[in-house]
Length: 345
Image (cartoon, rainbow, N blue to C red; front, top):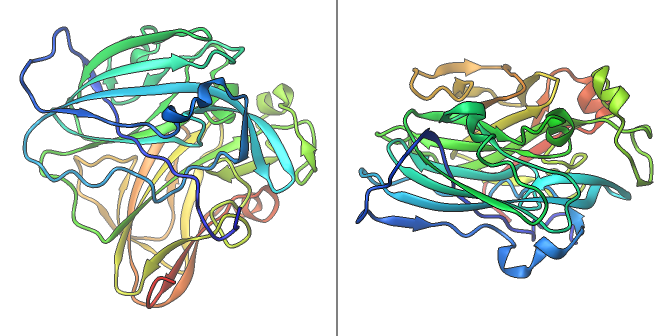
């Protein structure tokens, strides 16, 4: 893989909010393709390369004033993938990527969500959706053993950016290992227009081996209980979305960009900061029903929460997205970059 080319794609859209006994017939219907489903990856135990989600492969802004229905399939997949160059780890994922596919719907939309578990898995899984009214955020209705599938139906009742995550009894291990993502429920009036959008997920990984170990590293339950991770990363990869590995995201001078960030945790709060820039507008906790804050330097994003921030790009630069608890950047692998050029190479 060329370190500057993001050649592994992802696509999706998904879910949200109150249990719907029966769905109205005759409405426009949206069936969203989930990355990799056509390849038979559900029978593959390894990912050749990183599991990092491409931050640019997200559903486009919603340009409609009416509600539609979505049919969505998410598959729980346990895979061995690259945590760092030369280091692998047993990830637990949605659709073999970290974070899971970003879901984008409109307030008032309805969803039929099918949760599958790949046959090769050796753990049960389910999904808790913070954009949902219902017991366990839907986790009780979606508990699946390997090879099983469950379906539930919802209506999106309120706007915002919300986390979804696995919620079995060992949920902290499953989330740490990658089983989290974002659902965006756009308000009726939509979002302000921007030129580009990017999607990131922060989480920490607890290993018995120290940071930088070559070969396969193993999960450490004691370190997790003590909240002492060896890795804190974006998108399941050490400095993955940067010139150090897979390549930085790209934008042009004069554009306005929007960044979506979901903090999986399971334990650490992110002090999310763009080095060399500022959040010209941001919605703490993804709370889109509220007015945005303006010109914010660093915004806390708690585990189990989300963030939406916009930046203006008046000059050419490399924006470094970090957690301003900076030892996580210097010593634990947390970094993503956005290269801003006059023209995109």
